[in-house]
Image 1 (cartoon, rainbow, N blue to C red):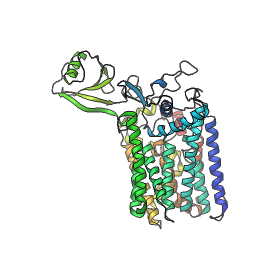
Image 2: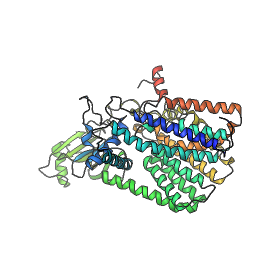
Image 3: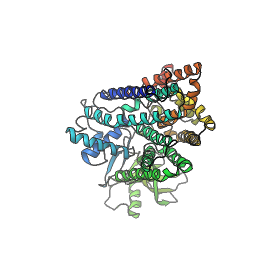
Image 4: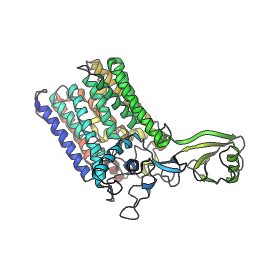
Amino acid sequence: MSEVDPNSKGVRGIYALLIIATLAVVSGRIAVVISREGDTAFLSANDRSRWCTIAALVEYGTYEIDDYLNRRGAKQNRRPWATIDLVRHVGDDGKLHYYSSKPPLLPTIYAGVYYCVANTMGMWLSDQPIYLGRVILWLVNVPTLAIYLLATIFSVDRLSLRPWAKCFLATATCLGTMLLPFSISLSNHLPAAASAATVMAIYVGSMDRKLGFGWWLLAGLAGGFLAANELPALSMTVFFGGLLLLVRREGLVGYTLGVVVVAVAFFGTNWIAHHSLRPPYTHRGNGPIIAARATSPDQTPEATKAWLVEQSLASNSSTVQQFESREPNRRRVLVDGSQQYALIRHPNGSTELRHWDDWYDYPSSYWVDGRRRGVDLGEPSRLVYFANMTIGHYGLFSLTPLWCLVPFGLAGLFRVERREHQLLLAAIGTASIVCIAFYVMRPEIDRNYGGVSVCFRWMLWFAPLWLLTLSRPVNWLSERNWGRGLALLLLAFSVFSVSTALQGPWQSPWLYRFWQFLGWITA
């Protein structure tokens, strides 16, 4: 990278070449993306869950995805739409139905894209899951990736001093993060990163000039959409609001309004889909108590039915069935094939009758103990989990060595001249610690590194924010020959990790597979 005037067309030309090349690579991968079995453009249970919702909304006008789960492909033993990311609860018709476990806002937006495509091309996703899947994927992912690239490069360009550092960080933005593999599959991670990058770019842009209400409204929409796609990112959405309160109060009203608009859309679509304001994956326990008995009665179906009749939850003509559940002291009670209740027996002999609120507990559920496998079993040790998510087989630093410079960028926040920059780095650092602690402190079943994916994907939305923190360290390294060499080495290893995952993001990290080969991992 040759030294050029940072204000010349040379640096901007490099930016353009990098962005065009990145979008072309992703477009090419989307053009040939196909499932392992060759019957859809869906790469995993994770994205199939969203594809089912998108298809159901346009083709049937419902969030219920029952019809897609048992569809057969060219091979009769194949169910190309099947997914483990499911919940089951009572629908509008009073019967039990399956739904995606993903928050419905993003699939609802993408369903709008599918609706336009279907009415333009005269094709249904159900009939053309490869061809039409690729078209929709390109229409939603490539523009989103472009927003992420443009917003992030704009921000690092404004806060980097030397042209070498500018070009280095632009290259890292385009090729050095694990967001690139996720750009060829349907997920929440790319939209979340693009949202974070948009808010960051607007904030950085406000450091040198006054922005109008429309820009702050856009920042609020992006901040709200960030939290809607990555719920722990709500911390950064709040911190962005705090930054405006401290240094850009004129933007606070617009930002708040934008966040509120997205919040209404998030909870509104959730209510329409599930008749609950809580996202599906929060329904994993027991509902409100209905009745309790100090002594344990006979728990036969007949005795349970009598109790339900007593509580006016069933009639004498009702059919009452009892099933084991994934909790050993709990039974699932099914009334007339649809209404569900939980019968819980405590060690002291008392019994509770509760509303059923475990949407993950249903026949053939993957999430019942004994069916989960691999990383989905959960890591028992929080210390081991923290080590593996930072420097181990799913490690933030081991898979993307560029992030090794992030702590140095955050540690130098008090040497940054501008207060707005200092506060932004402080917010990024605090949010990083909060989210890492959140994931480490999750219960064992949730300590699964994000499942089978090429990295610890739940932190991917930090990519644009962490790239910004690299501005000062990379500027400092760019002034020294050995520093440039070190920076390029970190970038090279990061690009290597990205290149191992371009077949698709829903595979174990290359480091995980290598450790399996060495026998260090047996699961």
